[in-house]
Length: 152
Image 1 (cartoon, rainbow, N blue to C red):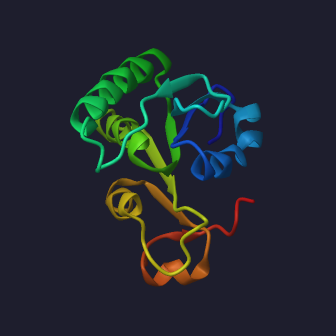
Image 2 (cartoon, helix red, strand yellow; image 1 turned 90 degrees about the vertical axis):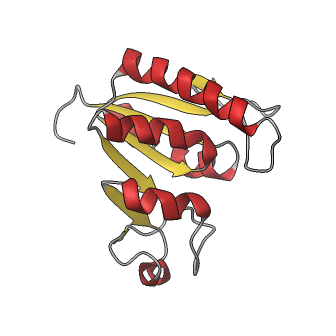
Image 3 (cartoon, helix red, strand yellow; image 1 turned 135 degrees about the vertical axis):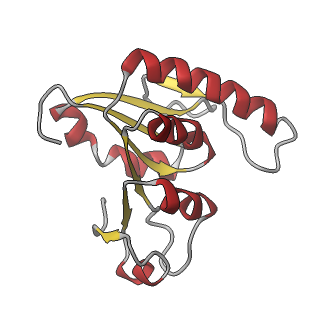
């Protein structure tokens, strides 16, 4: 990231994933940025909110369709150069849009995983331009990942 007008989209699910992502706030102060997370009963500060869902949610297909359409609108409006995420389901639409529009996708595997992969991580590992792990032990699971250390 070389220029000041670089645009970064930070996106993750609420809770711990979003708390980890917020550790990158100094980057958002340096570049043009937006923050996206899930709309929950807990008030997270973000520019945009998407629907919270998971694989066991019976409304999953409808919520993901909504999230994809909403992500597309946000993506076209903001046109990020980079999409940075710590996961989970809410990040998939934006990650796929980044790949479709040939933008850079950076994924940071959650700090909570030391020895094994997350479902999201397994998918993002194949898609991300840069895949970062926070534990050196995870290099055995993701051999091409970059060990970046803890973002806490």
